[in-house]
Image 1 (tube, rainbow, N blue to C red):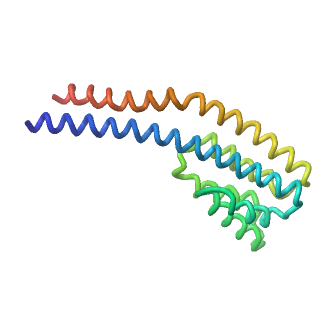
Image 2: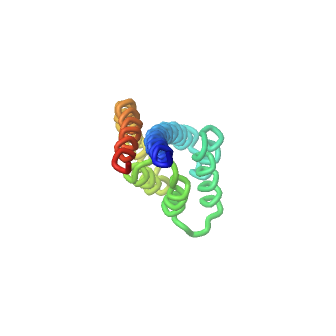
Image 3: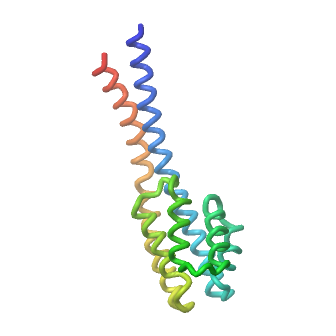
Length: 172
């Protein structure tokens, strides 16, 4: 009786792990789409309104979802206080802390942090070109993730359940 209960718990835990992985992948896709929205809005603020970067980020922060609204507010506040720190350092530092549990891959995070390297110190046309290039790369990544989502979601969930069954059989 105790072995059967243990086997059921192992199967349940492994299945839950598979579902957790599939939710992490879906969370990554949501974050990428929110970054795209944020970047498009920032591009508009920089190129058409000719706003300074801290003010542009403050305006955009009200139009994006969590965690990016808080990210933009903090970066804007720090950049506006002129503490002698380069904008890229502020952006990268905040990006690491806010995107820690976002489900994004290391490549996604590095690419996003690299965007901060190019914002703020170049003229408006160079910033526009850089942001547009980032948006094209981001769009490619989103399309690839959307294409992989149904397959990976099913794979993670199936492998979790099958792995749990296999492990339960081995343990019994």
